[in-house]
Length: 97
Image 1: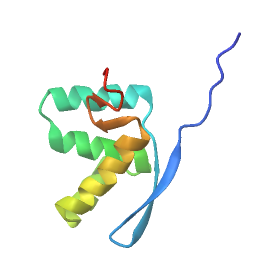
Image 2 (image 1 turned 30 degrees about the vertical axis):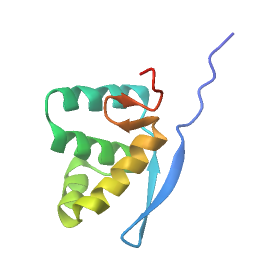
Image 3 (image 1 turned 90 degrees about the vertical axis):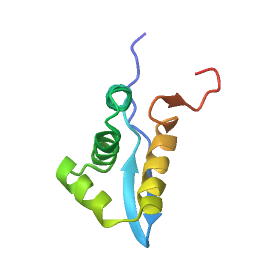
């Protein structure tokens, strides 16, 4: 039996009146975000997450993060993490981990 490859989940999040198309992170991207977080690279974790989920470059994601409030940035990040099955990098939605 061959494994079926399906596209990653997508959604649109409205942040500060702007509709932002996102996709869930792949397993490899989640693992990379977790590694960045373990290294206390919080800013880089957020930049990587937004860039991967929106298809923007890291520079574009960083510039966007620098142009919004903390709550607005957090709203987008939480939507991406939830769509990817996490509450934040390194934490599974499943209480068993």
